Length: 156
Picture (cartoon, rainbow, N blue to C red):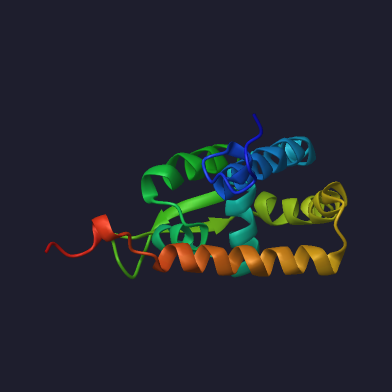
């Protein structure tokens, strides 16, 4: 018996599965590309934000990365142990911790410069296709962030 392509309960019809499979495939490519830098993919993301924005409070860093402090703190601890970042209580607000790059963390940026090109090459997509895909994924993320399922709506 053949199953119609419109059977929405088929695995190959699940966008979440396609996104998860792509994410796992990216993870493998990044693992190889980042090995020589001594970074994991989540650590690389932290470094990207710090290279772009400079010193940031942990809370703001978490907002950029869409990570809570419970997930971010162990990442920062490992990056600090590796000598790439420094964490210090904020002089402006004792409750806040600021994260900044060390000289070694700044220098790593140069060595990381080739990573995006390696990843782009691995996708088999041209630059326009990559930009289009990123735009579509950003739009999807915004739509999902704004979506409130009926079960989470205000009580009736």
